[in-house]
Length: 128
Image 1 (cartoon, one colour):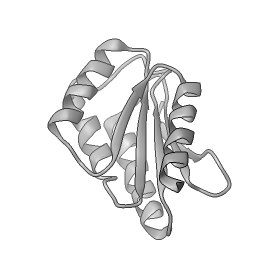
Image 2: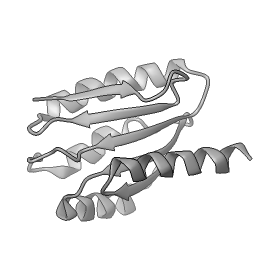
Image 3: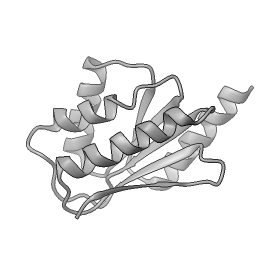
């Protein structure tokens, strides 16, 4: 019951947060703090996928989720893709994203395959 993160490629340019069925805000804060430090040590862009496709619960204050993700705000973060099939969560996160603009662009989708496509498209656009 936690939030974990993994690199989706050897180049460490695609980071994925994976939310278990039940998770706690402390889990999110822990992995965001660790990954933020890791990202700052890299000399390249990092795209982030927030995989909440298996989530069954969310904290009562969804602003906490957005707040912790916003602490990743860095010139090194390229795109952030939020994956969930929960339309309520997606709508709330879209509204929070509009209110709390920052450097990275947040995309929303309901499938992990689409998230990977969005990241690939962003990399093509960024590289040329």
